[in-house]
Amino acid sequence: MVKPINKIVIVGGGTAGWMAAASLAKYAQGKSLDICLIESSSIQTVGVGEATIPNIVEFNRILGIDEIELIKATKATFKLGIQFEDWHQKGESFFHPFADYGLKIDQLEFHQYLNRLAANGDKFELQDYSFPCALAKLGHFAQPHPQPPSPLADYSYAYHFDASLYAQFLQKFAVNLGVTHIDAKVEKVNLHASNGFINSVTLDDGRNIEGQLFIDCSGFKGLLIEQALHTGYEDWSHWLFCDTAVAVQTESVGATNPYTRSIAGDAGWQWRIPLQHRTGNGYIYSSQFETDEDAQNVLLETVQGTPINQPRKIAFTPGRRKQIWNKNCFALGLASGFLEPLESTSISLVQTAIAKLLSFFPDSDFNPYDIAEVNRLHNREVENIRDFLILHYKMTGRTDSEFWRRCQAMEIPDLLAHKMGVYESRGHIVMTDNESFQSASWLTMYQGFKHLSKRVDPRAETVDLAFLQQKLAQMRQSIDSAAQQAMSHDNFLDAHCRAQL
Image (cartoon, rainbow, N blue to C red):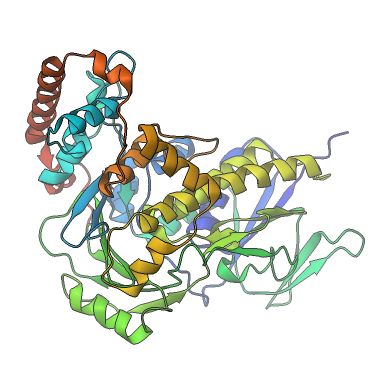
């Protein structure tokens, strides 16, 4: 007999906690399922995950959230991708869009024809064949048409938003669906003597909250998943050297870019995230190569606009919890691990983990095979993201600091080395299961970091060179013309979703 779960306890709020509460409340409609979220207003959340990737749009759509209402409530802007500055060499930049490049010709991947042009000595920029790249270059924005007239117009977008306001928005949404909200601190986690499962949590006001499924959104400390269940943590700092961040908010200056900026420094990188009412800034660095004082000075000396709060330091260990799901505890957000926000994956990992939980939603028996499969899927997903981040550091051409020289020299995971080697050999992009970043993203990095193919695919040589050059010139012209006709990002916000500031 199936024994359904009827009580879920979420420990911790913030973005992760309220995303879980909203999703589970939506799932619970029509079911006998009690959901309780416990958070303490005296505990500050990290709250700097302000840039997202496109699956956040689908997450909100599934919840039934009105996009314009959300944008106004969170003072959000649109994001077409990330501009990487000074990563390969100082003074160089490239753009990572949420889109493919060009069009297939005779069913062969577009970049293979670019490799042929490169072998012929033709000069080109990969970004010339991407509509969102052209929009970003002009500071323009247009929403993709649901049925694009051309594959060139098929692209995605994400948001920059105030993470605290997003959590508040989801809190209201979840509470309206029946989630119980308790403002208290968890003092003790109580385990079953027989099987080690979590039975209840004791609050600082003396209340004892029982549950069957516990969601740990308690941040880096992992109050349930680690402190109570001793799940273990896999440290990846031998590949990802950055272990500290300092963040500050500034007044907005100039036009609002429809993209995130990632600017490489001497011992890490800076982010700049434009919101409607301010700009989020931060410097993520390696404490092996830069002191906290120097890092804060670097950030404050280089931000644009007047700071509106005091800089805040965040220390972390890059890596993951060995299991995201242990017994009757499921960890989300920082409780499950942390990868630096170089590609804005923090909120996405919360979202995909929730999706896995819903796909394998347990009954009170907690089948170990279901738990093992969710852990397998999640671990593979996080490893793929890890490797994509390592790629940014490994392929740098910078030798101007010890940090970058160490990045170039480090040993990398075998699968990443294989992917890089196959692309260098013949321009083939290796993809595996549970990849968060598709082939166009890998191509962006290979081209942006000048990791080029040594051979031309013979199939690309069957197309007449003059015809190919003409076809690509028409493609560039079409993209440029369409981008010129789009509104500026600020004008788009004014016309459709400007928040009350």
